[in-house]
Image (cartoon, rainbow, N blue to C red):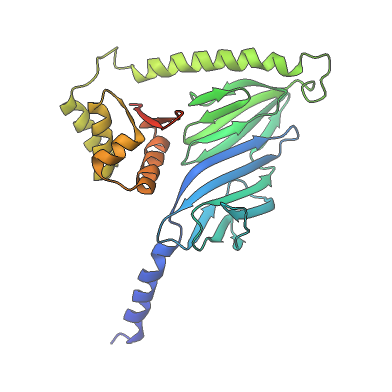
Length: 279
C-alpha cells in the first residue's frame, strides 16, 4: 500500500514546478575582446507566474557574474553545474552578465567564436576585427555588430592590431567595407534563400494557412501571422494586438517568440513598431 504522504508530495511538486525556468530571452549580446574573452549579456523576461529562473550559461568558466532586475537592483542567484538559478521574485526584467574565455578559439591568425543557442544573438566584435567567415546568413549587420540566427553558429575573424591604438589611421576603417560588403552579399543570399522555390509568387491565403498548421505555434500566434498576411505581410504591433485581443505585454512576448523563430521581423518606428513576415 502506498504511503499517504506520496500524493501530498506529488501535489507540492506540481505546484512548485511552474515557478521555475519559465522565461523569454529578450536579448543576448556577446561582446568579444582582443584577448578572446567574451562578455555575455542576457535580458530575460520572467513568466508572470514564475518566481525563479534556471538559465543555462554559455561556456564553462564564468567571471564577474552579475544578476540584476530592470532597475539595477541585485537579485539573489546560485551557480550550479553550468546554470544560474535566479530568484527573480516579482522582477519584470532580469539582466545577467558575465565574462568567459570559453567561446573563442584561435588557429594561426584566425579567431573563431562558437555559440550554440536556441535564441538569435548579437556579436559585437573588436573595432580592429575583420570578418573572414560566417556559419550562416546573418539576420543583420550594423558596423561591428552582427546578429546571427539561433542554432550552432560561428563567426571567424582576424585582428589587424591597429584599430585600438590608431596606428597609421587605417585600422578601424579597413574592416568597414568588408562588413558592408558582407551585409550586401548576405542580404542578397538571404533573399535568394527565401525564394529558393524558383521565384514563386506569394502563396494564397489557404496555402499560407496550411503552412502555419505545420509549424509549432499556438492559436494566438497563428491568428497573428494570418492577420499580418491579410494586411500584405506587414502590420503595426498595436493593430495586430487589438485584432486578436491580447494585452500589450502578452503580445510583446508573442512577437519576441515569433522573431526568435525567424517567422517575423520587428521593425522599430518613431511612434510604433511594425511586424513583417519573414517566411
